[in-house]
Every structure is written in C-alpha cells, then in structure tokens.
Image: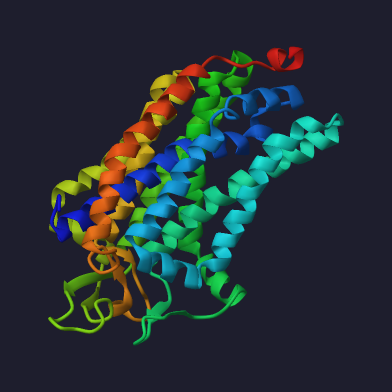
Length: 378
C-alpha cells in the first residue's frame, strides 16, 4: 500500500475538496455567465456572443461535478447514502435545473423568432442560477448540521418528508450562504465576459464584477459573525475497540463557537479566510478597472479559499447531525476501505493530469474575443 489508512482518508478529503473547487471555478464560471445574459446584454446578438464564449467549454467543465460526485460515491459511500436519504428533493431540483442547460444550448439555434431565442435564454439563466444558489444553501446547511440519524442497522433517517424535509433547508443562514455563492460566481462570470467580449459589452460587466465582488466580501464577513454564534461539534473519541457500529459508536460533543474551534486550535489557518477576502476585494477592483485577466485569477483564488474556509471549519466532519451528534459522518468513519482508497489514488494520479491538460488545451484552442457583429455575420 502506498499510504497508511489515516493518511489516505486525509488525502481524499483534500482531493474531493480540490474537485469541488475545480467545479466552482470552471462550471460555476459558465453558469454565472449564463445568469448574466439579461442583466448585461441588450439584444439577442449580444446574448449569442456571450454564449459563444462558453459553448465550447460548458460540458467539459461539467466533468468536474460528475467526477466529484463519483469520487464521493466511491470514497465516502456513507455520505452518499445519507445525503440521498434526506436531500433527495433538493438534489432533484438541481438536476432538473441542470437539464435545462444542454437543451437551451442546443435548441436555441433551431428557431427563428425572437420569442424562441428569448425563452431558451431564460431557460439557460434559470438552469444556471438555481444550481449556484442550491449549492451555496447546501454548504450553509452543512455548517449548521442536518436533522438526520442512523439506526442500529445503519439505515439513515431524516425529520420530515418532501416539503417538510426540504423547506427547513431554506433557512436564513443557508439562504445567506446561497446568496454569497451566487454573488461570488457572478463576479467570476462578469470577469470572464470582460476577458472574452468586445469592449461595448465588457464595459457593462465592469460594474457588475465590482458590485458582486464587494457584496460577496460584505456578506462573507456577516456570515462569519453569525457562524461564530452558532454551536458546533467536536470529535472526542473514535469507536471503542470491537464496537459493532463504527459510525454511531464514536463520541461527539456539542460545543459553543464550534465552527471556530479548528481556527482556535490551529491559529495559522486564519490566513485562509483572510486570503479569501483579500482576493475577492482585488478581483472587484481589477474588474472595475477593466483588467479582467488579473481579476479572474484573484477571483479563482478567492473562490478556492472560500470553499477551504468552510472545509477547515467543518473538519473532520463531513455531515454533522443536529439530532444525534454521534451519527455525524466524519473523514475517519465515512470512508471506503483502505484498498479502495489506495486504488482510487493511483487512478487519480494518472487521470487528473490528463483532464487538466485537455482542459487547458481546449481553452487555448478556443481563445479569442467574441462580438455581436461576428454572431450576426456568421
């Protein structure tokens, strides 16, 4: 074996985090661009020009989400099982929204009327906005904990069904996190539009990138203040030797200011949220100045460190439980076998560089500025 079991569990926590960051930076960017079609564009030709900058990449960007989902299924099977047991309707809502995107990309060019184009562009906007919001809401609920527990047969249970299970997820703090997610990605999308579109469209994106970037920082700080007042969980001890249930057999306690416990325990990681804030501010400033290349670099780093901030606050918990803390899933008890994690690591070492290489190559080959005039001519 390449690594011992505990090291592999920690490595896969990092790798899945990187996959989620890759999804947010790439697929989140093209979702944000789709969401900005109507706020920034004045007519169909301009919307088509904006769409032309993401058409070659959106399906490749979606691979990050598919890969992250597959990695969670293989590396954290209990997380996959517990999440689908109670978050089924929320996940279906995201899935139905995402379905609109390939339909809109394909069918919008098979009509002639203005209404036809406008309706498919609206579908593309909705199909992009909803996932950005729901993913942020999901992170907000993970930070608060979810109302689930495991019985003696390792079956997962949640409070409520359908709307009675879905509506509590739409609580104020979770919605705040959802809004932060949307604004953060809209900053990235507006910078991309500046980078790839003609000056007349890019100028309109400047104000959007600045407003969304600064709003992201303000709401991120507000969310931090609120989360400081929230209780959190502390992993006290693993299951006793010979325990039948490796998940519910552990000892977990509820503590005040629990989401900041790791930051108090390891003070130097406070640099993570600081970097997130600084980078988003710099992205907003460079966006307003029209220096989109630098802005999108800062924005990408800001997105990455915002996700790392949440991960560092939760560690080692993956899915905290508000009903039975001992049923909470952690990095140490929700993972697959040593052999499985090891084999998956070999696969990632080989395939991840290939995926990164063809992604970079695709962006390189499809580079260039688009304009409404080009779309009209061709």
